[in-house]
Length: 289
Ligand SMILES: Nc1nc2c(c(=O)[nH]1)N[C@@H](CN(C=O)c1ccc(C(=O)N[C@@H](CCC(=O)O)C(=O)O)cc1)CN2
Image (cartoon, rainbow, N blue to C red; front, top):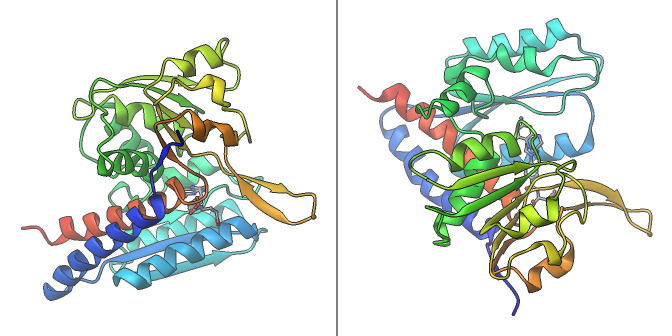
């Protein structure tokens, strides 16, 4: 039987509608939440993602603050853009779109963000709080995975979770999030060099594929009935010469999994929705007595 689809597109739309009500309530208290973005260079994917983030903002009533810099921007110019949003009282949270063009030091840029305005939850202080299980803005992709599983009542407490991929925006913080006391899962974080990747993935009740390697996860690696989330996103050029995005799952995984978050339409839209949630939460904590 084919897996039940974890529909990130519809779930994200429901979350945006919930956030619209919270933004309205903030407006009644004289606060308009503001999301800032820093976009450097001309990568078409990054431009499309940032445009999508601002479309979402317009839908829920969040103000957009956009800073764009050319691919030739220096480290100092990018850090100056970060400082400008740190100091802007209209901005409750902001992100620096990743990856940055070659030659720029991403870690230094992320460290320059005011941790209280870190809408991506990627500042070292906020990642440190995640390690310590203290409240802090959460990275959007792992938060999106958790939220999607929760809204479909997929059991997390006690589940064996295998994450494939150890990148800083998804795989690495995913393990920290799912092992918090409130989630209580047992997590293994693998990568493409893991010795028995297939055997390890086959143990999982929940598989999170975030390696960015098209087709890496095949049907024989999945325990029948497991929940499988495709977080990989790789641009490939088809035989027609046209570019498209593909995930980490082979198509047959759908026939073995119990639940499946596809790419597109799964975790991508949830990532965007969680960014809005982080900004609304930052604005709410700014007005809390
Ligand atoms: N500062 C950050 N940079 C990047 C992040 C991030 O969370 N913070 N994640 C990715 C890119 N990303 C958001 O920025 C992102 C990627 C994809 C999607 C999405 O909705 N994808 C669609 C499919 C693609 C399409 O059709 O255009 C989907 O999955 O349905 C949203 C956000 C790297 N950089």
